[in-house]
Length: 207
Image (cartoon, rainbow, N blue to C red; front, side):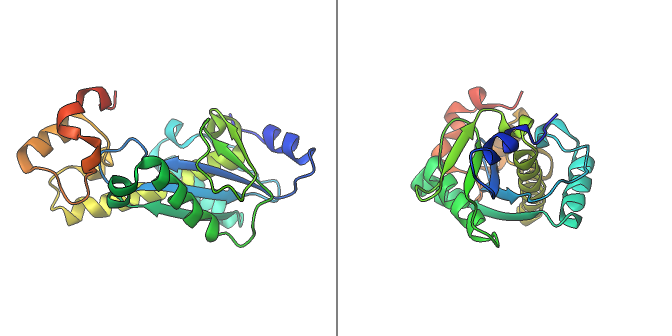
């Protein structure tokens, strides 16, 4: 379970305002990529916090509301499927992260980023950490905020597409059923054309 161990290590280096960042939707066939930046300045007592992929939708929604009540500072940014197609996924992540950071009340001293690839603006001090969303409460909280936000957005997109692609279930990710819906209805305006879904769909399926 995530804890504050990594954050405490960073604090010992002289930093005081640590921002955890995580993204959701990088590998999705449709919809935006979403990035959340979170700052937790004081201890919080929410034992269920974990990587968003390891907890249920109901639990994610509950934890998200609890985090808000604890006055956890967070900002959410997104880059659309059209921006992903035009700029590539890494630049889109950079844009989404900048938008998230700009929504924070305070500029962080340092960023703890999930993963091994840094897509944050060069003006920020960044520490990358593999599986940080499983180890750090700050990053795990960011993953929950991002997942809750994007899932609700994909449910809205599902309705806008007249329920043609089951986005409310697959959230835009690759599934056999999703591919069948594309074969039947073609690509929507929310699909990522640059992902070449029709030719490379098998290797991108969600297991």
